[in-house]
Image (cartoon, rainbow, N blue to C red; front, side, top):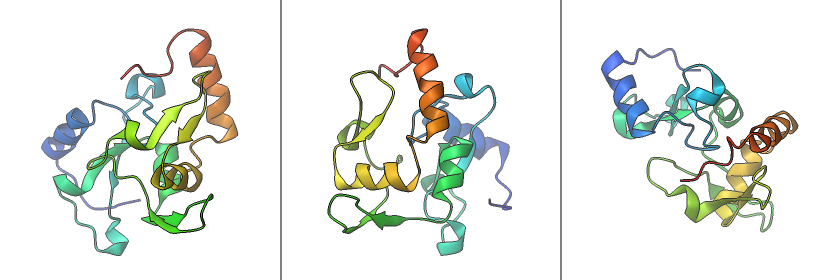
Length: 142
């Protein structure tokens, strides 16, 4: 977790750009019931700076699992692949929802790798998504 100060103005700007939702799993602040965290896309430990172009919103769960990772092995090919960058890449190119709306599925090596590295279908969130689907809150329509 970063200890670098992030100004209120920069935090607000990134939050608005991210539409108040996690760039990885798309969970919103509204569903989480609290503000999301700011993720350094290139971790500070790897030389990433605290600047608009290196920040995006992440839910605490995705941020925790991402940690200082920037790459991981694709579970299908074994290749070393860069993780999804929500600031620069389009979610729907790399991911899609399962037919029941509960699981995130990878459409590309980047998507598959990010799902595995960030544990985006961990058992706890799957239970929660199933409940959200049952009341019509999930999956996001955009």
